[in-house]
Amino acid sequence: MAETTRITVTLPTDQVTALRKLTDNVSGYVAEAVARQLRHQMLGADLLRHQEEHGAFTEEELAEARSRIFGAAGSDGSASAA
Figure 1: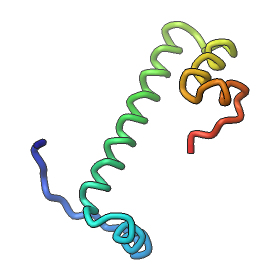
Figure 2: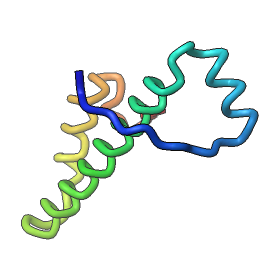
Figure 3: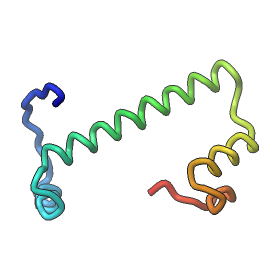
């Protein structure tokens, strides 16, 4: 099990109510959301660094990436990452 540190976080009451309806482990849910956001930000930084070194992604590269991420249905750019 990973080492943990106890902190206090203040959230809007309606978010806490919604969280408690979704899970009985609010800490675990929040920890996963934070981990996901950290991965997202690190990936964004990596992509920017790549573009600084190699130039902007071409439309073909972006289409291939969409296809790999979303499958053939997302290759037209209409897929959403929601």
